[in-house]
Image 1 (spheres, rainbow, N blue to C red):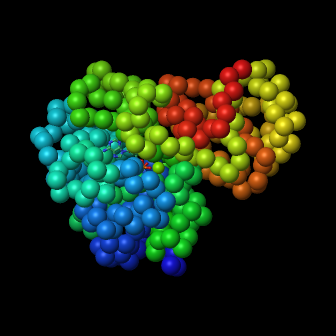
Image 2: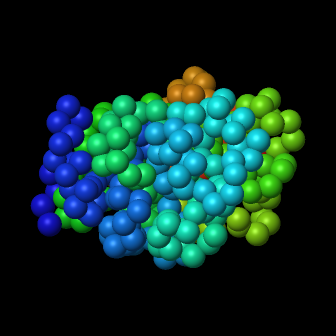
Length: 330
Ligand code: TXA
Ligand code: MG
């Protein structure tokens, strides 16, 4: 299959392909998604084929708004869910709710719940409106690889597997949406994201977080994710005094060492260094692309320095924890 990159200014071919049951990659404000008509089971199966995604990992349905959500649920909208989407839609918040029977089994991976999000990105919204159906979309990477934040990264993974990629430039946030189980109160964060635990709590009061070592309630959180080819070593500190001796020791084992670190960090490894920038918003935006860029340089290992668990820092820690082969606590 030839993969064509489309400009975001001409969406007609993409809308037609989606209507015909084909798969199209598109930008959202979080990461690129791999979309299909969410009410067409055969179309959604093609997403699993293109990604090599395990069949037991359900998809997110993308809608325009609250009305779009109401079409997909089997019980009245809970007051807490209504409050959360009122506060954070359109945006990087996914709610897990009781699914209507009309949703294909393959989308829900057999569960009686469904994950739904209203993206704010204009391209995503034009596609949903143009197709006239919710769009099912996981991140547009091959299963297990870092989520793509540029059309080039999508092409790297999906060339030959899908007909169209819409190029909307770099994504604004760079990390996938916050996934919240809204089936019962208190709500539970299944995957942290840009809508932080603190922000959710400001709307609904009590918020639980799924324990990293507890049973994985978002099926997707069970698998190793976001992983480069090189081993990824996570040093849980950004203090040069603690980190430098560890880096020196690691260099004996891995002579070509890639380094990803927030600014300011005193040791830069020349072309094998990627900066996460001065703050968490920039770090979230650069995390996946830094991993992909360094991986292209074929290092023996990649070291990432990160140590923050509040606000957006928790989402970054979560992704690094899923990607890392080893965690080093100085
Ligand atoms: O920002 C995002 O959420 C991006 C863009 C494209 O919207 N999408 C995305 O999809 O990250 P994906 O498939 O890579 O991650 C969806 C997560 C997975 O961890 C999946 O297991 C979980 O949501 N999920 C989906 N349906 C669920 C359900 N019914 N119950 C619990 N978790 C669910
Ligand atoms: Mg994903």
